[in-house]
Image (cartoon, rainbow, N blue to C red; front, side):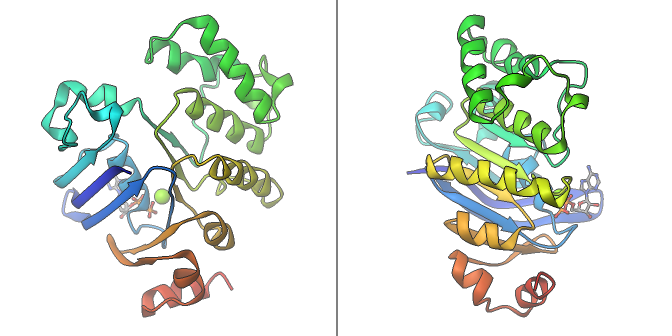
Amino acid sequence: MKILEINHCNKKFGENEVLKDISLSVSEGQVVSIIGPSGSGKSTLLRCATLLETMDGGDLIYLGDYAAKADPQGKSVYASKQDLQGIKQHFGLVFQNFNLFPHYTVLKNITEPPILIGKRPKEEVYAEARVLLEKMGLADKEKAYPYQLSGGQQQRVSIARALAMKPKILFFDEPTSALDPELTGEILQVIKELAAEHMTMVIVTHEMSFARDVSNHIIFMDGGVIVEEGEPDQIINHPQQERTKAFLHRFQ
Ligand code: ADP
Ligand code: MG
């Protein structure tokens, strides 16, 4: 079942056309990876999809039971402004630089959004947060502050924080790019485990073999357009477009 559709998305910053007629869809349980050079518009696309930016043209359509209140037909989210916040809650975004609150403990970083935004009962949220911390191998870190953790641990906290909102889709924007190489593997492993649990994910990454192994679909972007997309093996091992070949060549 399709749960997100982006149709003909355009986005400009001033005169700079950053996204040009981008269309994609995400189905439940699917893992979509987005690859492409720096400046190609990948982060902007994720920010549009998660409503941190407003598209200048095109449609953003959320479908499924959670969106039914907004519109049973899964019409554009822009059509119903009052439901934006409600829909926003269903989409987690994990950033390159973790974006944890430095003055909150690990536990508070994870529990604040479901309590304040999700308006859920404290005890329930705390219990779930502890299960998530256990799952992330951080059971003993709930009272720690972000600065007391390694980059890999901080990123696992931010994944737990996103999961605490029970997202329908979890978006990752280069989740390992700020990490030392030896810490990259532990984050990729967490994401692989989420994929095995059929979590729906959209992942911007420069980890090509990871993208090939974990994804159902890979999108190669360059200069604000989708140059090529398809099955992981096709895109990573048998790209058709010259721009895709040139980009992938850098990783060999
Ligand atoms: P990527 O994530 O693929 O590296 P981005 O989406 O970050 O690409 O950026 C695409 C283009 O949009 C770049 O030229 C960047 O400078 C520009 N850009 C991104 N965010 C902003 C912003 N908030 N204001 C102005 N320009 C921006
Ligand atoms: Mg980016």
